[in-house]
Amino acid sequence: MQTAEIDLRFPIGRFQAPATITAATRAEWIETLAAAPAKYRAAVAKLTDEQLDTPYRPGGWTIRQVIHHVPDSHMNAYVRFRLALTEDTPTIKPYAEALWAELSDAKSSPAALSLDLLEALHTRWVVLLSAMTPEQFQRKFNHPEGGVGTLERTLGIYAWHCDHHLAHIDRLCERMGWR
Image (tube, rainbow, N blue to C red; front, side, top):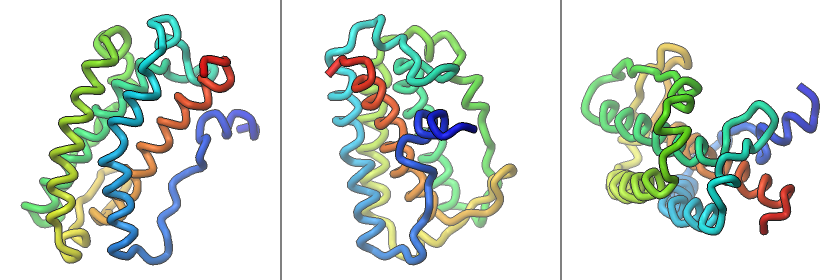
């Protein structure tokens, strides 16, 4: 991949877990999840349907698809957290995110549907996360493609995921002069 393509695809870089994850790190990640719905809502509040249907990069998803992808992804993550908290290293089911993004609801539904879903989902997820003990963050699940991972690291991935896709939207709006 060329540098420009990497910058468009990974505008904030790829996720890198810190060497040490502290309670403060987890709290920061939880706050990122708590704040994300309002940030996404603000990012697309004044966009037209034509703008929502603009890909954030050549060959990439449209803003609308990104808006629908985030709660799709985070619903899967929320279920994975609940499974790992109630079962011993459960094997979770992956999902074909690229194919989900091509379904008609992801390509044409109003963004408000997924913004509302994201708000409710993150409110509930943050309640769960805020009550978890340090030991619970060490619980694990097995991803058939990614291997065994802890809930702590997974929390970091999804905090990054919030910022990653928000940057897709923000950078496109800047490039297009929509802000």
